[in-house]
Image (spheres, one colour):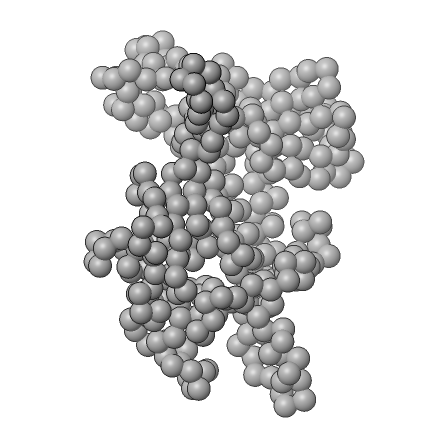
Length: 327
């Protein structure tokens, strides 16, 4: 978290110029121009880690070095441009998926269909990540923020101290154990989650012999996503399960029903509970199938169609292409 006295400031140093967000609680905390890496600006989060970088033309870089400008507004415009480009590529992919192949190119179309499906999924994920970055730049009205903080922290100990007419005081701290890292299999299914905290193990109760990961949750699955009895651990009720879809544990118990968006799945049956909305496109398949009955090499994107795990290099080329934002 940035200090309040730096909010909205531009700080010139020997090799860098730092622009601080006017909102101290924003995920995007500051943007830095460095003479060591000319014609590029770096975006930092509240922990001081680089989360993004943007290439600049020589003229724009020179103007930013010479005078103070709203670089956060510039960064937001760049993000919106990337979102629009991703949208155009996604629409092209969807158009190809919905088109009917002629007889002469039927084989080629079927071979590329899975790659196109996977590209559309990646483009949608890219748009979601851009949406998160844009939302981190939105600054609420100062009066509303101060009132919210006052109501929230006035009766309890906190890192944020309300000082009456003076304003707010901030203390900077970093708490381990709040971050989550997902460990996945070859299809992207989350098999375990660990935190950013390490656990010391002592062999003699006096000194630490080695460190082990802080395991938040772990689970092995049968094909189609049914949980293996006795092969799971969950310390804090992790909300997502097989295929990284949200569990609906209140209906049939832990991990026995999942929401895929278009339909609901029962992993014990390996089937969806309703008919496929696009059944007319696949009359030869059962309308209740999960991932076209290919749980080994495929995942179900949203309850509609299977997405096989293809060659990662080909997918990157299809999703990014030879565009400035993808290089």
